[in-house]
Length: 161
Image 1: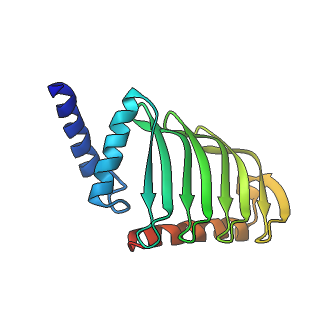
Image 2: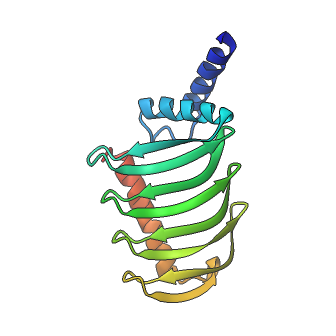
Image 3: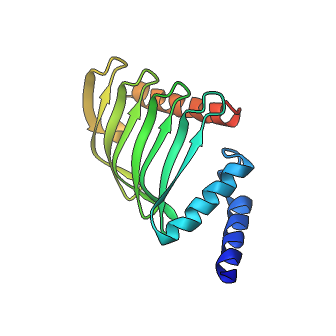
């Protein structure tokens, strides 16, 4: 029991000191996330960060063997899904979907080892399919909308909303 407790404290300390997420999560959330990551070495676990102003989910991520594994979801402040993607042993792998703030699909495609692969579908704000192309050929306006939504999400998180 003593060795496991020391390992837990070491893991929490390292996560607190070296995590790139420290500006995203509160100290308590970092500690809880560290515990979840540690516990994932014994089986799959998940962590949820909530919006402070609405208490709705902001980020839901899953871990296995100490790394992200399984579905990751981020939500707008209004509760609508911002993005959904999947990890396999710490790498982005499988379907990826981005959404407009109104809840309509913005784009979707496949990932393989952290890279966009194949054709991606992209949509207007009403959910109408506009086209399908390799990720780097998706119209700039669509990719800019995705980036703007993500930037606003992180601004809202960091401002404590």
